Image (cartoon, rainbow, N blue to C red; front, side):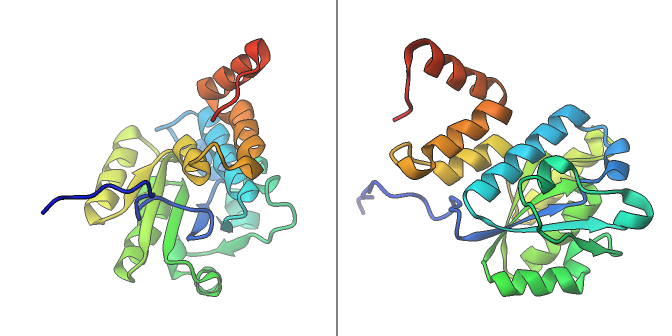
Length: 217
């Protein structure tokens, strides 16, 4: 049987409307003990994910653990992207065991869950395995997660992938939402985010535009 190619996107690729992003426990106390990624890169990648989700109007849940009593506020890089959005504060380490979070997941009603947060081996593994068990597709933004050691982060990522979660990166998340430079309504949004928090890629975009007026697509 001949396989026929068509110019269409694969079903596993994310779109802005097919998933719920859950950003978990990006808080000072959690960050202090994170050693698998340095704090500067962690905050930058979290900002990239938050700005991408806000810009593309992705359904997003922001959740904290013991915000007032122990862990502190969520990173401003995230809350600034979602002004006025309520934090769902929990006592449970596993976000998926929190009734208020699950009520919001069900109200949104998307079949895919994208996760980012601290720590990978606890606060990301818990909802990832729980959501998979309940029939959701799960994606984990690996470089917008962190843990107490590289070993802990890597073993957690392997455990989730073995269970069926799909790993990705923060820049990949942004570019997957855009996916076609002919989509002019979000072109400036995407390149603007890249220039601010897209690392070397963003520097390249800035250089090309400044030096010779280059334009993607």
